[in-house]
Amino acid sequence: MEFSIRTLAPEKATTGCLVLGVFKDGTAAGTTLTRAAQLADRAAGGALREALAQGDLAAKSGSTLLLRRLRGLAAERVLLVGLGERGEFGEKAFLEAIGAASRALKETGARHAALFIADLKVGRRPLAWNVRQAVLGVREAFYRFDQLKTQKKPPAPALTDVTLAVLGAPVTPLAQAALREAVATADGAELARTLGNLPANHCTPSHLAAEAKRIGAQYRLKVEVLERREMEKLGMGALLSVARAAHEAPKLIVLHYRGGAKQAKPVVFVGKGITFDTGGVSLKPAPEMDEMKYDMSGAGSVLGALRALAAMRAPLNAIGVIPACENMPGGAATKPGDIVRTLDGQTVEVLNTDAEGRLILCDALAYARRFDPEVVVDIATLTGACVIALGHVATGLFANDQKLADEIRAAADDAWDRVWQMPLWEDYQEQLRSNFADMANIGGRPAGSVTAACFLSRFTRKLRWAHLDIAGTAWKRGRDKGSTGRPVPLLVRFALRHAGRKG
Image (cartoon, rainbow, N blue to C red; front, side, top):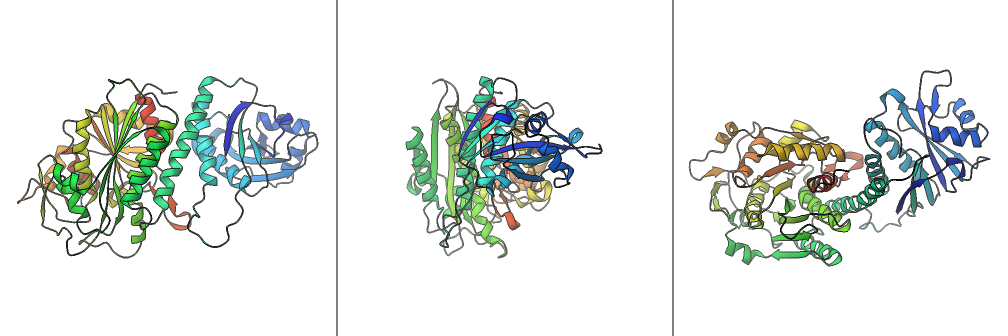
């Protein structure tokens, strides 16, 4: 699907479908047309108002009405999209309108569409924000994962070109740059989404390594893959303890993107890559265990973010570090009570083998020090406790540097891939006390997401570090079950803003 942004007159737009907005109001008509819709209605001899007068569109946020072959318009179809109350129009209503329009477009035979809702004023948001969200929303609506189905597939959606139409103003270079960023980000999010949706017998640690090499070859990134023997020589006892019973070989995958000055310190993203998590000897309950294929979503988001940054030639240096393995039961598996030694020499009493993410991350975080990073951000589906705390809306944010936390919060708001900062106080460290090792790998039920982050903080004391717990935001359940591709938009926005590109 190709995207463009340009100035257009709605009445003259030659397109398969013209997408126009309608606000709900308290007038006798019950609706108010946006400026673009007014121009189209005038050219069509009042056909839009006539259709609305029949009550076929309530104009509530996300409602749609499709009209065909209106005289006076060059477009083949007109899609009216409800925007809700004008006074309440904000980010949520804008995203609902983009999603509703995209889903309606899928049901038409239109090959081309012009969206005259992408330039609507959304609070204090600049046009660049609208552009990014519009592209991501359309791409998400049209995403399909059917690679593994053998039944005859329905025909692919016909839409091939989408124009984000700007009414009566020249398109700025900033808006064009936002479009390029949005397309690259959407490609990265789609990669993360697909990797997450693949079952664990397809998306193995070796598959993640192969995907990293493919990205490296396509965008000329340096890619290193450390095998078990190399990790043993380094002393990655925590990571290897998780992989002991798995037949799939563990991998430590490192991608280097160099888009900044040679001497500039890199931003390092560390992504948890448990391609399937049974819980090990501390076996998980059977219901919904299939969702543990999503336990590599942190790894997928790092691959997606690096791909996006490389595709847009972002002006910074970035490194992705992905510890990848399976967590399986078996005769060789790590047992509760075992003590392992980490890469930096600390010892950990493994009280629960299902708290494995922090064990592979602690070695990866220690490994990241060798790159002398500017900042390190790890991304992990780490704790069910974070889901209880924040649900499926916000990602949990922890940081040992408040300036870095503020940067991430600002980027998350900008990307509308939101986070909520949680405490990382020293008071919680006592819960990790062990009588037999430097620390235990769990701290009990109270504040489970906090103590998990506290565990990781013990390996990042010399780093400016933040931790994103995406257990509640990496995938959806129920009818819309599948990977979300989050937090790729956040990571991309953070990296660009960190490099000074806030626009």
